[in-house]
Image 1 (spheres, one colour):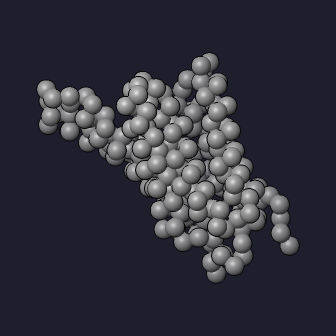
Image 2 (cartoon, rainbow, N blue to C red):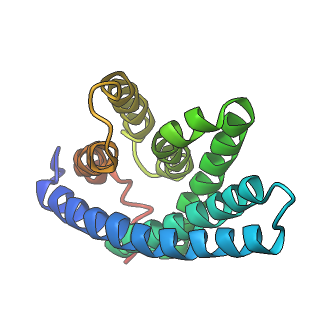
Length: 191
């Protein structure tokens, strides 16, 4: 008998994402900014700030995507190979990196402000690509992600803090995964 919502899995997803994003984010931030600082120091006097920022962002998103993708993949291991989810999440991180770098060509301040949303959108696209092959509700992953991002962008003018940008992602993906998981095609479920 198929359940319509798996709230237990949603709560587990909420907890694992909170830990992965904040702990993985702290580690990714430290490593990426250290690499960016090193690159800036090596190129001192020749646009070191721009080079440092590019190196830092180029390292941050793959590291954060790997941390989040691995922990989420561990939770999904009964349904997918961990590497499938990890690859989808890292591809999403690379899409996010491309979005951020494209925005930085336009306006670096805009790129910094919108980077959490670009990271969310890129990750949503990468993971949706995989989810669509295993769940009839997978389109919710992308549609709701874009909707919540647009709402957060509208509210960004009044509240601007990192937790405000991350918490909607964690809560939304937890609810979405609770909705999507029960429709997972049993033929794809690992035994």
